[in-house]
Image (cartoon, rainbow, N blue to C red; front, top):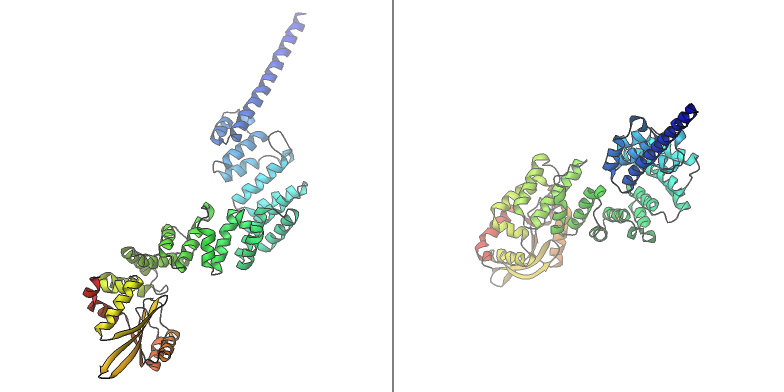
Length: 450
């Protein structure tokens, strides 16, 4: 009888212990689960570390630890932990489903740029009956990572056929066309059903596509008020800043491109282009000392890039000459006044002065003798773009149209050999930088009074 009672008591104690252990286990799991739901991932990791050693390889704990590691930036370790869950045990539980496990393994593989591994897990998803639009989209994302754009498009078309409102799939399709340099096709995708209004990445790449097509105003319209997406921030500032640059909005261009000066880029050509545009924008916004720093930086590394060597030397010149700086950068109204003084100093009388984007066409006359007027056509150019044969021919034709006797081209930029030869052939006189500077400085005192 005593043994019977002792056995009963022992059985009861064991049952109580087992029930307490199960309750404690469930309680701990719930605490960890609750921490993850509240996005308290460091707390979840701390709770996991406090567990008995034999608990730490249980599927639920591996799942919780993997999620916590992923969300604290340890993506590679997260993959290693979750991949320890045997695939035979990836059935649905109260904490996860087999779909979630395989999807997470595919996601982490993709984030670690292990695209082939990701495709393997997506294939397992499909084999288990998850042949959905999302599965096709996951295939497409990883083929996009592998730059296999034909397969990417194949799976995107499958996904969109299953779900025509699959915004992320439509957006990725537009990005594929963008990467294939089929920019008009990309624009068509992003504009279809106003996709760009529902997805910020679609709007971003629509702006990039417009830029690639040379449609700078539309590019600015798409990009200017778009919230910054960190993943694409360097491209965002480059394309927006460059679009402003080509539109002549140099203050806006400078403020965007300046953010990229200290950013390392994969392409040195891309970086040189940034510094070049910064230098020009600095000049156009009267940041002359900053312009000198950019020109010097570029000159010391790549003097043959575009007209860097000439622009660097020009910068040295205009920093020493207020008159030359005024000629190059003064507002149009003041530039016209300076040109009038320069002509007056050579005994010319201005007849007409027509303003164009980067130059003034001036028809002037100069009495050489009593009753005789020498009509001279001037083209005052402030752009430092190289002067080629075509520019000289334009000058010659304008002189002929105005029935002027001579044509003079004032140009601070480089005169190409073909341009010089054409000028000699057509009788066009070219006044270069040194003569411009001398003439501007001769009237500087009078000009500075205004």
